[in-house]
Structure formats: structure tokens, C-alpha cells
Length: 67
Length: 542
Ligand SMILES: Cc1cc2nc3c(=O)[nH]c(=O)nc-3n(C[C@H](O)[C@H](O)[C@H](O)COP(=O)(O)OP(=O)(O)OC[C@H]3O[C@@H](n4cnc5c(N)ncnc54)[C@H](O)[C@@H]3O)c2cc1C
Image 1 (tube, protein in one colour):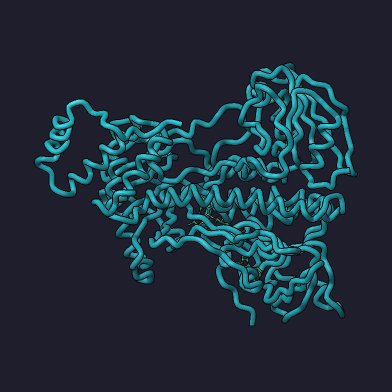
Image 2 (image 1 turned 120 degrees about the horizontal axis):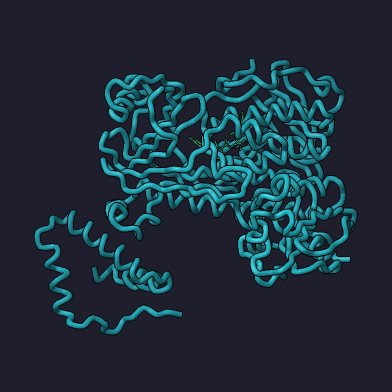
């Protein structure tokens, strides 16, 4: 069974995070949600493993309270 | 007074007084079919062609005006071919393969159904539902002339059904007043709002979709190609989505998604319909409105399709959204599934338990159809702001990236259901055999010398042998099996081998009367074949 990676896996986390936020710099809220949706779809296709995707969806859904 | 609920496109079974109406006591019939839509008529045809007397009761004298279904799938044509009425459907129908999907004013992508070679029938034809029904009724007339014991009674409205352990008592309203009959078996084909379900107090649960769709069937000489065009949020603003699809006789189906809170009467005014159409077609395009209607829909099914001596088929048992063309197409698979089983039970060759497999197999089919049509509907009519954002993200990406195209869902078109893991399936003992012909599958067609494979299958149990020996006929518990022997010599194109042998050098298939695979082996083993027949007919083991 393939498992969702939940330990740190991104080299240069601060750089990645800055890129993620910078990409939305000049976006309205609507544009930013569309951006986020596109990003999810692009990444999901890259992962391409239904089991991992299911775990990721579950993990994200668990955090509703945390926002 | 006897009131009609709708106007007719074709008057095909005018009311005629039946001897039953003058009988002293209610006359008993082996099978009564309630409802003469496509599913009821096909049921009468299936049983009548087996020589089983059937009485069909419909509360009108023919087929209602207005085409609901327009897309009929290959499997429906194959089933119709078994009944002997596929030829006029194919003649009249429009064959199409190309679909285009638009978002706003941009083409997102196009798809080709790319029908596989070597099938007698195309993946789909478009045909107005009244024609489909008319060809079925014409076949009934022909079968009657050849002695098939089928009776169609128009303007016979069932008003009450009393269900007993071994029969059903029916009260019927006619223009000459009421009368009663009895049925050993009652098949409820009385449509989505099934009065029979109501009379029996049965459930029909599922989801209502909060959206309305305006259908306009228009006749125009316009030079639109024979393709399925689907717009999400079209630039011409005539609906939240719009579908354009060709039908025979120069008629086009236009389907606008117009929202939930609408004034139906206002929307159905000709000038308002024309305003939407003009915006879509552009100025100066001449057309005639042939039929218009507003529909809403639900995805739901009965918990059980069999209730003792009453069996439900078609829309009365399950209802889906039109996206995917799974309504009439799945109803035809119900008929195909039920016909031979009821035939064996009435002949006393199989126990009533065989009919529970109708429930198991077709409920499985209904669930698959509801799942597919619900998913398409959720994509077409997103329910929340964020699901709308995701939907449009898919459409946007699909223009540039191939990966997003399979996510675009404007309806997954009907394909036959495979009865995986259900009780009638026997062993899959063909190492290297293709997955598509595993037990439970509908047999795919293949060209063979002088015709097509499916012409040889169906109606009874068949032992299909490929490069294998077997007796020409075999009988088990009074049920016959007929061998169809094929080798490479009949398979010039190699498609039979591809679809039925895979990597195996030889194969023996036990095929049910509805052309579904019951079991398969690499060679003939008499004990195994007899056991598989027992399983396929739920016979007590000897
Ligand atoms: C807009 C739209 C588009 C569609 N497109 C497609 C498509 O492209 N492909 C597809 O496969 N399906 C499609 N469908 C679905 C298809 O139309 C139905 O699945 C099909 O008509 C069901 O057939 P039926 O025989 O079960 O029921 P019905 O066609 O509803 O027939 C029921 C019959 O029972 C009769 N009846 C009712 N009450 C009584 C009574 N008390 N006594 C006697 N008779 C009675 C009625 O008069 C009627 O003749 C579409 C549906 C809609 C609304």
C-alpha cells in the first residue's frame, strides 16, 4: 500500500512557500481560489495514485476546524 | 369519462373491447405488463417470442408526443436485434461519433467515440423515442401475425392492484367502464411516476437535482454537423449549459439548463424559447419549433425490484438524469435480463429464486447508472461555489493539458453492465482469457465468416467453443444448451480470438440467453458445464 508522505519532504520549505504565496500576489480572491483549484488538479495528476490521493483528501478534510 | 394524460405521436393500439370485459369472473393470465412505454413493449415482445402469453395494458392508445430519449446505445440495438427490430432503428437513426465541448466561447476539446471495429452496430444512434417505440410495436404486430401470443390493450388504465402470494388481481378502467383480470405475474413498466408503486406503497428513494432543463426540438436546414456539442456557461447566455445534438428528419435537440427557480409558463412561451435559440444560433437562422418541454430530474431507485409476483422494470424501478443516456438503455437491459428468467420459471424449469437474481443484477446495473449520471450531473451543475471553481479549473486546464480532459464530464455514455461477483456467475477457468469477456460480461460482438457472432448467441444457452470440442447439444435438468463451434477459419480479422481467447489457445464459454457470459474454461468439461448451468439458473444441486 502506498502511503501519503507526512514527514518533511520539500527541500527549501521557505522558498517553496514564498513561491506559492507570490504566485497569488496580484490575484483577487476569486482568482486565487481558481489558482488553488488548478494547482490541486495539476498536482493530483502528477501523483496519480488513487490511494495516496484518497489519504490526502482525508487528511485535508480532517482539518476543517483548523481552517 | 376516460381522460388522456397526454397527446399521441402515433396511435398504435386503439381501444378495442376484450372478451375479458364480458367474462363472469376475472380471467387469469400468465403475465400482464402494466405500461406500454419502450420497456413494457419490449417485455411483451421478449416473452411473446418465447411463446408465453402476455397481455399489455397501457392507459393510452399509442406513443406520447415529444421525444424524451434520443441516444440509443449499441447494447440496446443488439438486444433489439435479438427481438428482430434493430434494422429499422439503424436505418432511421443518425450515427454520430464526434463530440465537442465548449466553455464560454472557447472549444475545450473534442472527442471521438472511436467505435471499435468489428461490431454490427455503432456505439450510438440518435433516434426520437417515438420512432424507437413504434419499431418495437411494429415488431409486436409482425410477431403476432406469426402466432406470438401478445395482446396490446390501449386505453386500459390499471387503477388498483391486489397482490396475493400466487397472483395479482387488477382493476382496469376503460372507455366502456371498469373490469378486472388476474395475473400470475405482473411486470410494472409504468414509468418514473409509477402508479403501481403507489398502489403497493413502495419506496422510491434518491436525490432530487435542483435545476430545470428546457428542451427544444427544432427543425432547421442549418448546416450544423452531425456531432454532439456541449457548452458549459455558453457565451450566448441561453443557459448555464447547453446541448445541441442531431436527430433524424432534420431535427435538432437543444437542451438549456435554466436554473431551479423559474416560471415554467413564462419560459415555455414561444417568444422566450426563441430568444434563447436566436442567441445561440445567431441572427437569421430559420427554424421551426417541433416540441418543447421543461424537465427536472432525480436519481433514485426502488430498494427491491421484485416483490413476490410483481416485478418492476425500466423507469418505474430506477430513474436517472438524462446525462449519459442511461434511462431507456438500462431499461432495455432489464428486459433482456428478466425475459429468459421469467420464461424458465413459468415453464417450471427453474425455481422462483432465479428472479431474485434479476433483482441483484439489475440493481447492480441501476447503481452503476445512478452513480455515473449523478457524477455527470454534479459536474454539469456544481452545487457549491468551490465545486464550481473546481469545475471551471478542469475546463480551463483541459484546453491546454491532456490530463484534464478525462475529468470533463458532460455525461458518460451508457455501456452494458458487467455482473461482477454476482451469484449466477460460474468459474472463470480460462488462463490468459481477456478480462472483457469474464463471467458476468455482455458478449462483445465480433465479425465471423458470413456475419457477426451475436447473431449466433442469445435466446437459449449456448456453448461457444473456440478451437475446442464439445457435444452439439447438451441438456441439463430440462434446459438445453446448443453448441456454436468456431475456429480460426471463421475469424479472418482475428477479432474473435482477441476478444474471446486472449492468450489462450482454446476456450469454451457457457453463454446465457441474454448473451452474458455465465462461465468459461480452456476446454470442455461436462461436469463443470452442467454445474455452471445449475449456478446460472439457481437450480437445486442434484
Ligand atoms: C429529457 C429526457 C431525455 C432522455 N434521453 C434519453 C436518452 O437519450 N437515452 C435513453 O436511453 N433514455 C433517455 N431518457 C429516459 C427515457 O425516456 C426513459 O428511460 C424511458 O422512457 C423509460 O421507459 P419506460 O417504458 O420504463 O417508461 P415510460 O416511457 O414512462 O412508459 C410508461 C408507460 O406506462 C403507462 N402508464 C402509466 N400509468 C399507467 C396505468 N395506471 N395503467 C396503464 N398504463 C400506465 C404510460 O402511459 C406510459 O405509456 C430521457 C428522458 C428525458 C426526460
